[in-house]
Length: 288
Image 1 (cartoon, rainbow, N blue to C red):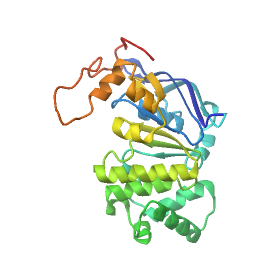
Image 2 (image 1 turned 90 degrees about the vertical axis):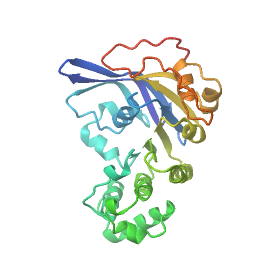
Image 3 (image 1 turned 180 degrees about the vertical axis):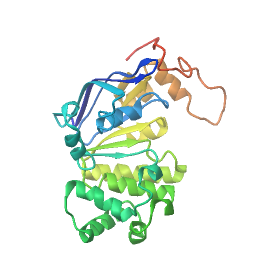
């Protein structure tokens, strides 16, 4: 049984001009302990897919969601808001793209850690929460956890906040981790350290990962399998090595050719440059 199974997922938003279709029949699955990447350019539908899995869009009046999302065989789409909240932070965790804006700026890190731990252990004492948080911060290579726990997010560097977010996301040993562009805002050295750290911790805990990124170099090193999304549609999927060595869809080939290189030269043309979700999608040369 898959840890996560998405079948024919659709999403539309109601605008003054009418409904706008954002996701068109997305289907993907993740096995236990598997690292799966969802790859595409900005605005292709990666992050909203993760937010639906986390249950963050289901209660928005302007969003209309169809299809089925299953977590460990349970239909998330049919759950109540209360049931979805019970899963968040306990069984399903997320590392958001910008850790500074994701952490609450008016609460110290220690207090926010306690709230996360209370998702799985209601009534946990401050002493127990602090001891647990200290150990988790040490796992993510933070050598002065006491100072970090007593700090506000704005008093820490971006790399430090990213490590705090990873520690919080893994605090309750979730079955599924959603990682939305982790480390994008960091310099390349800290980003590499963060991803190596996340890989080690995830492997040690047996957690499944949906890794969202447009950085193909990182995806190639991190993911077991890849799904390529273009304007709300999955256009290609397969084992990472196979997709990178033999990309079948023109959009996948264009993404790979767009990676920076030392020789310079012009960028490849991606079909429908700056596409709008308000216009119908026509994809040529589809070879999924």
